[in-house]
Length: 219
Image (cartoon, rainbow, N blue to C red):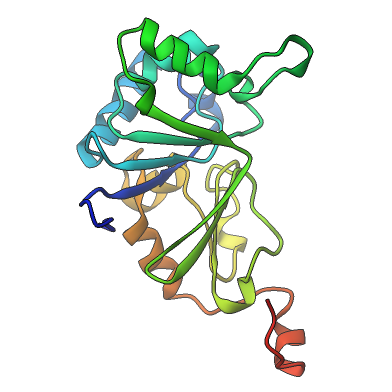
């Protein structure tokens, strides 16, 4: 599994939908109750992720408010970085009443006896480099993305593994339903797993024809 110098690992996941009863029907998750689903997702997560590992959550974590979301987070290993999904009202700031989502999450973590370090940040989009590879993360799949013509990787959620048969090039659904499709487990992906899968694919993106016909150095 991918490691930083301090031996922590990097994981990516999306679309857990904790506490969402109807997701079991929509995505054919074979559980009798939402509590059973929650417990299994938490168990699979903690089987892979250690306390100090980095976890990128790419949206649709839960329909719950902040107290309910933190109630789940308390049980999950790792230091979490959140990218907002369309079902994450608890992650959105509300300017009309000066509501700061990250501050509310930190306050609730402390109230429930956990550390603010459990959640590092909340964003809509993120890029990072690891081992010279560029990763572009967001809730929704992108038509094109930063340096896609150079082989950068687009990691997304939202689609619950429903469009993977249509995807070409170096982009991938990292949601738990795609993990189940590949591994028969509702769990995060390690960055190493994602990289191995995507590096085996050809670079394909809308700009490729232009890059081939105009081989100047693009930035």
